[in-house]
Length: 89
Image (tube, rainbow, N blue to C red; front, side, top):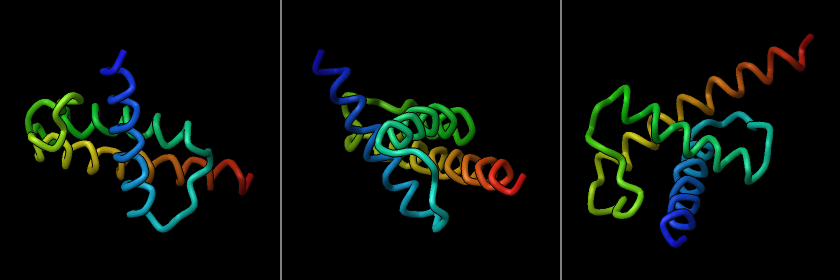
């Protein structure tokens, strides 16, 4: 149970950092931030290969955490592009 709570907290932190990096306003609230954090951690680890993103010890493996932030930043950028395209239609 604690592993799930810890994973949600880390995903929230990763998503919040990614949302702060991109100056555009991303649609969605805290749930969207958590989703971006999860997807970004998976994408970042797959793309950059900095090692496994460990949810139980994220600060002992800083490269996995960094890969998650980079991946989440990419996800936020794509999410804002899609949202902007849908709003202008």
